[in-house]
Image 1 (cartoon, rainbow, N blue to C red):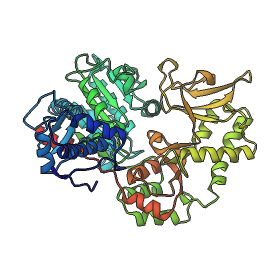
Image 2: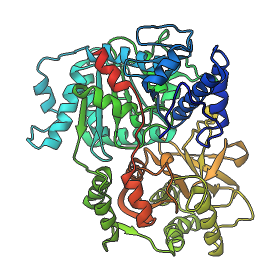
Image 3: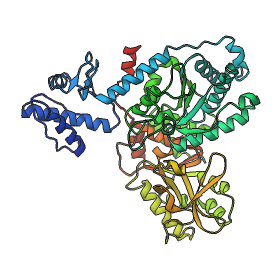
Image 4: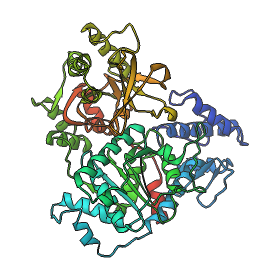
Length: 558
């Protein structure tokens, strides 16, 4: 952050860098020391910075030598060779300062994965068995899928990474079929999970479709799971506490666990998940390491792919979207802002920058949706029509935000007499659940549509994994928000025919190439942009640079 600390120079905590929580945290621990006032002020600034950097998604803070010496004499921290659980802070071998619990999360995760990493499960005649599921093609892309299967069968821990549409789900279904074939006498007990309800539903749809397309033997098809749950439900969340039913003392009963959208998993959750896996069980993580990191601390998937390359297979060939989108995503990922911007200025039907009248275009994209509502079409057709197009925003408030675009778009739709804003729950209102409600089987990220039922009563209908719909009266719903526009973070795990990515008018720290990459790779057919060259270029040139110690600690552990 450009701040230089000293053990002698006092620092004021009124800096806008620090929140009141950062300051309170720093002052609480500073009061436990016997330092002089000047030393306390220096310590408070350092601890406030630790609290702030934790909030930014870092798991630790890099120290200078004077900072390290100050902390070691404070009595608040342990050093690399010490392991006192009574100290709230820890300094590792690389002069990283941790809150004690995040150091423990890292160490527990490393210890469990190190044991899994060293577990080899060699299978004889594997190549012949692989031939039944994978072509013996020399094409590297197809060999990648075959290598992923070989890795997952021979090792207890596997990461299958790759961009959207690279066949991660299809590959994992083949892996599951292979493993069940190898364990035909006693089929494996398999769990499928994802970080959010929306991502779980998307994986469930993909698994079901892949099983149909692969035409597996019925005996294998019958033992492959289709139901996907959230990680919280898998572990047995005990809200409002941070604890789970399944943990290191009460292990999960599964022989194999597959987790999709692993880039969304933070350090704490990954540590708790891995600790709850029984010995000799397998773990397969699926995800795109180039996407946004978790909202909470860490860049776990990216760190694990770097730390454990022998457990990682990257799928390269994209089957989902057009070549133009693939090239656009590659330019953004490589931070080639000039090339990426040039692609937005070319006249083609795939990538296009919208002009000042973009609200008219956004409203036009919902014409089919409202026409189907008017004609009383079936729910699936209406829902599919809505999901063909989605507005994605970087932030929740301000110009071109979720709140701003939902508000302005509703006015345009009202002026066209497509919606009636005299009531909150108007016909055609799309909503996203923002609070889990297990009793109603509604989870954060689920999207429903406000429609009349067969009696003309207004209800909010949600799709179910079995293809049916479930309607709820608005009064029963957990917290919801209008979702003509959603944040890019909320869109992870989704795909649409077309997306419109709207960036703010001023540069903000949230704008990074990972955010933009995640947004544009939600689209299968077309991308529209609402931005300026200045903001677009700055976004592509910025990247998430979180400080973690996971890779370095793995090197020590291995």
